[in-house]
Image (cartoon, rainbow, N blue to C red):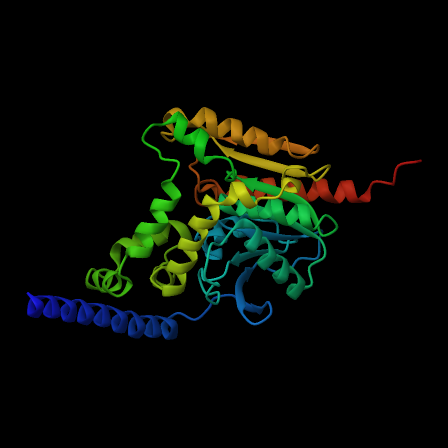
Length: 336
């Protein structure tokens, strides 16, 4: 029995070592094949990858905070649809895409807001319209609340709500309040090297097929490669955990945005949401109520990833809000 146990332990160690080596070699090869398509910005000891549109001279700068684990490249269709005089950045948060690895631990929305604040400082951006998609929406609200002199507008694209887990689970018995914890655990338990090997044997066809819909055919192989990195797995697990603890860490100030010009874009009930949709819609309405100067638009014909499905409408909403911000900022001060 002792010999069997030793043999089993030795086999397990060899399998783990083989997976680790395959992951390390394969990741190094991919890094040489697929250099960053954007710019790496130092935020104080590590770098974030950003993609920028052509530098316009009009109005505030747009900064996009993508969905959980999503890359900046997923906003290429929206950027193409923006007017040429608008400057826009999309950000790879720590560990995602081409950004340097994220610190270990939960990637809470407050941690991420601090990370993006450091990026805005490094880019010397003083007038910003934030666009937050899904989990990025919570981060954007916290960032806006903490930087009222810098953030002049906010767009929430089918944004997550820090209090969504319990009401969504109550509306659909198939959902669990602990769903985010389970997702984080399953992803963390996945053996990276052998997962990479399986995808390599299959030519990464599934990953590339999914990436085509997100970043386009030209960048799909690069996006698929970045999805297999150790840093990406760590970042996604950290963001799942961050969203799970968001109700406990999101400051109350992120719910009181005063007169900040804001647009809330919400998916319509045409994509099989089922019993959770009325709850989701009510959560979106509560987001819109957080600003006295908000507009709530429900868009049909799209899923949660509006940046893929209706990029022209998302770009139009961004352009409209920038126009509103410019009008608001040009208004004379009130007479006291």
